[in-house]
Length: 256
Picture 1 (cartoon, rainbow, N blue to C red):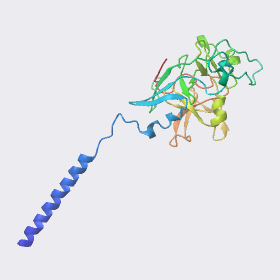
Picture 2 (cartoon, one colour):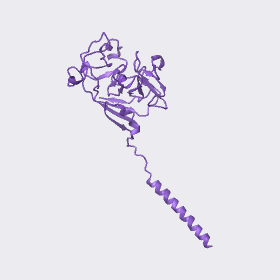
Picture 3 (cartoon, rainbow, N blue to C red):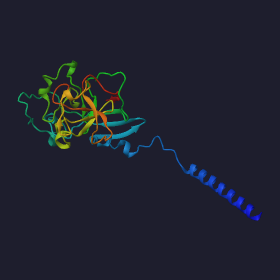
Picture 4 (cartoon, rainbow, N blue to C red):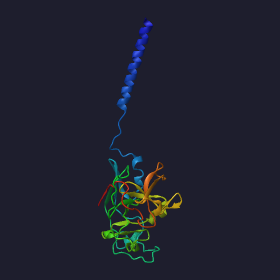
């Protein structure tokens, strides 16, 4: 009888102890802070080394930039950066002609989806910034002002594939050769406003052409940065260069 009582007491004590431990563990466990910016979520975006800030806002990454290319350019002539960043045109375009604009600081804020998905209804890319390159310079689409072809405007691109518009906002319509020379032709070059990444003109050692891409100028495959695969855009040598018939995903916003 004494043994049975002792056994019951022991079992009751063990049960209570288990309940206490479970309760204590539950009490000590904290739900993740939704306002926290885990490094692994923002690491890919922090590769945009030309950004002045990279932060998280809900399901969006917010990237700010001053839009000052880190490479030299003839368009730094007559600016406060001329002494260190001006360089005469030394590219291969025999028809090159410098446009009358010069580089000016532009405060841009990109708000881009962190978990991009295909849009059920595609939207055309606007004139002006449609994405951001690693050096903080915006990407523009395949059109000049008034949605004219780049046929003439291309002759004003500097030796690194960019130029400033009338307000001095420097941008790339075509391959940013400074980045592909330093990062690689197959490297991640930036992101479009819909959150999908932009890659250079080669993949797995093969030069990508427009025939390899869909109507939005991208495709889905594994990349070095996305081992599970992701839809991504490619820069190519022919029109539309970066984007085709609009964003593949739902675009975020850019303010300036």
